[in-house]
Length: 341
Ligand code: 13P
Ligand code: SF4
Image (cartoon, rainbow, N blue to C red; front, top):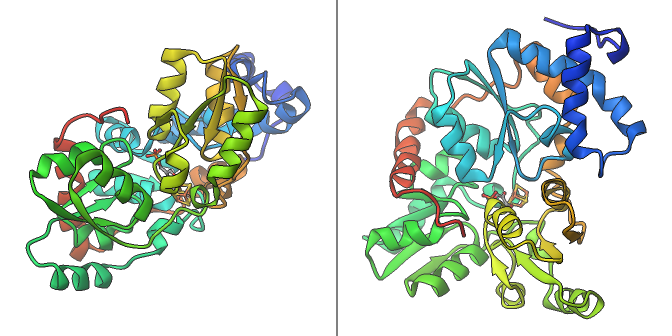
């Protein structure tokens, strides 16, 4: 099915109204001239979703026109996994990165899961293979393997349990052991070790967005913005986390701002996230050190539309790994809801 884009003004009144309503929350960050370019895509995607019984799940790092314009549900990696379990839709379009789409597919083997661009990878997922995990298991027998969801299904299949940044502490504590192999994010693993007192065997995987922050940079922001509160994602280096007032997942940071309403906030994470939090918290001054995730940013409105029109790119998982990978993700979901961290 290939649709022509119809200018918004030529669309039925109810489509124009529904599309305009999507713009209202993001008015403060998306100028009207820019919105005029997005609106026909937003209208077409939202109409096509109805025809396909599809939903768009968007990660917190998606840009405003996606996050507010076409997402049905949004959240951090843990929330997206839970939403994927709960949906009645036949088609899930994952506006995020590939490992998130793969997790949705693992939990919904009978649904169609689409990722609008196959280049939406992740430096952490790229840092480790299933063969690496097997070698670590040989070297440290009887040590449970806790794997961050930012990995391929092949790596999850070699793991005992998965975690996200939101529930990593809870997952490690749930095992009741003194030592775990924690893969692949060295910095998240170091942070979890500090919170839990559990010894961690680490891998040298890093996030290309968060590894770039430095403590000097944070101190410069503190000096320039009197009274600013610093919120950091646990994928940042330990020296950066030591400078933060709050460390948590992307949803944890959003919740922190909504609940404490600080006057000024420095978001030490991907910069689109600060736009989305700003929209929901008028009156809070957001300072955004603009580190962009090149993978998240491959997803655009034209690609989401194309994905729904052509039903590409459909995520498939080798049946030889899917069962074992699913078990590691489901075991994580059984641990309970995230700590909010
Ligand atoms: P969250 O689970 O905190 O949303 O993190 C996902 C991610 O990719 C952060 O870089
Ligand atoms: Fe991966 Fe980092 Fe991008 Fe998140 S921000 S998807 S961890 S590269």
